[in-house]
Amino acid sequence: MPVQMPTKRYKTRKHYPDREMKMTQGFSTRAIHAGAAPDPVSGSRAQPIHQTTSFVFRDAAHAANLFALQEFGNIYTRLGNPTTGALEARIADLEGGTMGVATASGHAAQLLAFHVLMEPGANIVAARQLYGGSINQLSHAFKKFGWGVTFVDIDDVAAFEAAIDDKTRVIFTESLANPGGLVTDMKAIAAIAKRHGLPYMVDNTMASPYLCRPLEHGANIIVESLTKFIGGHGNSIGGMVIDGGNFDWLAHKDKFPTMASPQSYYNDMVFGEAFGALPLGPDGTNVNIAFAIAARAFSLRDLGPAMSPMNAFLIMTGCETLPLRMERHCANALKVATHLQGHEKVSWVRYAGLAGDPHNDRAKTYLPRGAGAVFTFGLKGGHEAGVKLVEGVKLFSHLANIGDTRSLIIHPASTTHSQLTDTQKTAAGAAPDTVRLSVGIEDAADIIADLDQALSAL
Ligand SMILES: *Cc1c(COP(=O)(O)O)cnc(C)c1O
Image 1 (tube, rainbow, N blue to C red):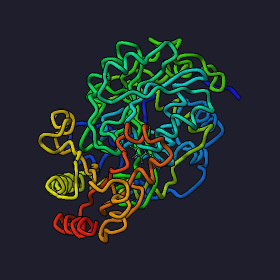
Image 2: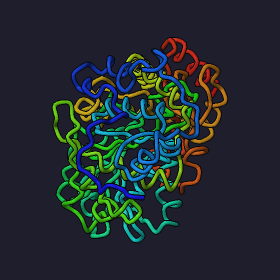
Image 3: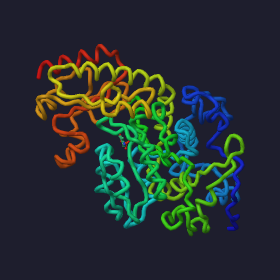
């Protein structure tokens, strides 16, 4: 079947029906409108749910072009779907990236993003303060692929640089780190990554793009769980890889063969060339979507963790109220943290939004709209008191999630972080006395009253 050689110019991009809106309107407007135009066939104003596995080709040439990446369009829902595509466009827009790739979960987003960058024998330099599941993924699951990881303390910027060797392919941190609510000095870490010709990948789950946009602070790739604040209602698992469009893959050819060398399975196309500088921007500016294309056309295609269209629809609906919810989340969290600070059963509170917190200055720089909804505090009664508290609350739900409308509580040492050693637990901000809250958007007085009744029973 004759296939055209890759061209560098793609005039239309169905994933971006209202690309022109990017950055010209405010965040709240874009949280509702980006990526979603009324359906041209039915006039449906809400995003239609394209609950289908596959899409009919117009003719054989159309099919061949789609498979050879000569034209963007729908083939099969593992590779992409119009409902999911609308969500991808919206989140990429909100993060200020060039293109998004939706995945079945936040962990799947991490898998795809690392899969593009890594080879057996390569390593990741990562912050030690990560979501417990991410520590497991990086240190155990990835080991079987031959990918190494060095964890360094989030506050020891020099240690990031010292950990880099010639096999390092990426630096990875969270923006606002789970579970401790610590704020990463992203500008300093981005500068190190740049000096060493490495992409800086940031997990922006805890902050959400409403509170923080890491691409504005020098990050190159965003991964995030949409399960948490973006979906926001605790009803769907999902994730997203977002290409910052700001890394020159071809300048580091030897390190990133997936991006910079010919791929035999796509007619020797070089992703970094074919998709590295496309005139797709709002004013004809060049847009680099090469990483997102590789994450989809290689990693998502072959590994398979695609998002379901139904989940994309639910997450998109949730996303429309992200700004309103985040404002309430942050205001409530600050009230609850302030209250706990003065409580006799509580030994410490770590919330970057509190004046006097070691990361309060960083929060002002990186999270000017609020320090998020998730924070930790310590109980004088230690491990035992932690277990008792999660059983004593009534309004709070005891579960392993964050970012729901509801207030959530967990004792990390006996749950999310239980597979870590005691030293790792403490290093990750999940010491035995530590309780983590994800403060919901109920009335603050009710949230505080519930904690008070459970604390008084300790
Ligand atoms: C929950 C979470 C993840 C994983 O996301 P899933 O959607 O559960 O796979 C990754 N990073 C952070 C910071 C999280 O909170």
